[in-house]
Image (cartoon, rainbow, N blue to C red; front, side, top):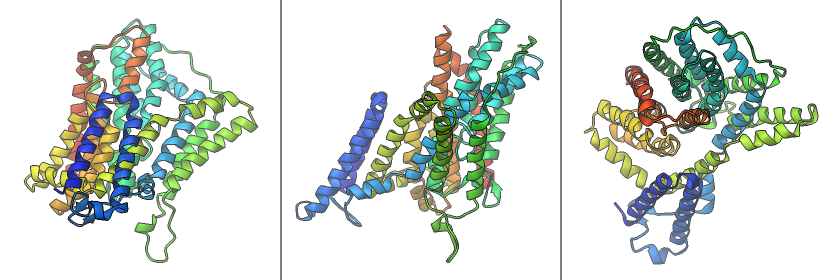
Length: 457
C-alpha cells in the first residue's frame, strides 16, 4: 500500500471509531472527516513538488480530491428522497389512516396470537413504503391498547412489531435508507425491487423471510389464545395525505420504466439522476402547500419540516464525501481485495462472509454507514471474483438490514419500540429482546440468504 492509502485508511478507521464512541455527534464526525480528506487533496494538488516524492502518490497517479469533487460525491437524489418521503409520511401519520387500518385488522382477528402475527405482518407491509421508525410509532399504540384491554404485557407484541418493521424496509426502494443507497449504487429503480433482469427482486426475498419469521412469532405466541373485542375505530377526516403517499409510490413505479442516461440507448429519452428525489419532494410540497393555503394549518407544516431526519441526512452527506475520499486514495480497492482473498476465490464463501458479517456488525453498529461503505467495496470484490456484483449487493442488503434485529440497539425501529415501552413503565432487558429477536432474525436471514444465492448465483 502507498503511504497515502495507509493515511486514508487510518483516517477512515478513526472516523468509524469516533462514530461508535460518540453516536450523538456522528454527522459532525463524518463531515469533519470529509473536510480532512478534502484538505489532503487540496494540499497534494497545490504542492506537487512537496508531495510528489511519494507520500501523496499512488501507483496509478497522484491523490487529488477538491471541494467540487467532494460535493460531486454527495448523492442529492438520495438526500431528496429521504427528506421528501419523511415529510409525506408525517402528513400520512397525522391523518390517522394507519391507525384506522390497524383497528380494522384487529377487529378481524380471533385471539391474541393471531392479532400479534397480523399486526407484525401489517407493520412489515407498511414499513415497505414508510420509514421503519414511523411505522413503529404508528402501530405500537394500537398494540398497547389491546394489551391493556385484556391485561397482558405489551413487551412481546411491541418487540415483534419493531423487528417486523425493520425487516420489511428492504422490500422496496423507499422502505429504508439502505434500500435507497443500494438503488443508487446498483442503478436500480422501483420496479427492480420486484423483478430485476427477469428474476424475482428483493421484495419477494424479503416477503419469504417475513413469512418464515411469522411462523416463529406464531410458535412463540402459541399459548396466547385470549379473545379480543376491539369495537372502537379511529376516525379519519382527511384522506388527502393517503393519496399523496400512494401518488409518490405510483409515480416512482411509473418513472422506473424510463432509463437513466447510463442505461439509455443512443437517442433514447432518459430521466435526470435526481428524478426520484424530485418526485418525493414534489408530493411533499403539494401536501405542505395544501396545508398552508387551504387548511391554514401552519403548525402541521412546521412539525412536518421538524420530522425530517436532518441527523441522517447530514450523516449521509458526510459519509458520501468520506467514501469518495477513501475511494480516491485506493482504500476501497485494498479492503475489497482483502475480503475477496478471505473467500479464497470462492464466490459462495465470499457471499456467505458478506451476508453473515453484515448480520453480526449490524447488530451492534448503525447499518447506514456500514452499508454506505460496503456498497462501494462490493464492486471491487466482484471484479476480483470475476462476477456480476448484484449477488453480493443483495446479500449485503439482506444481512445489513435484517441483522439489526439481533439486538435492541441494532436498528432505530427497535430503539423506538423499547422507548415506547419505557414510557409505559416497562424496562426491556437485552436478553428479553433477544428471546424474540434472535430466532426472528435467523429465520428471516437464512431464508433470504438461501433465496438470493439460488436466484442470483
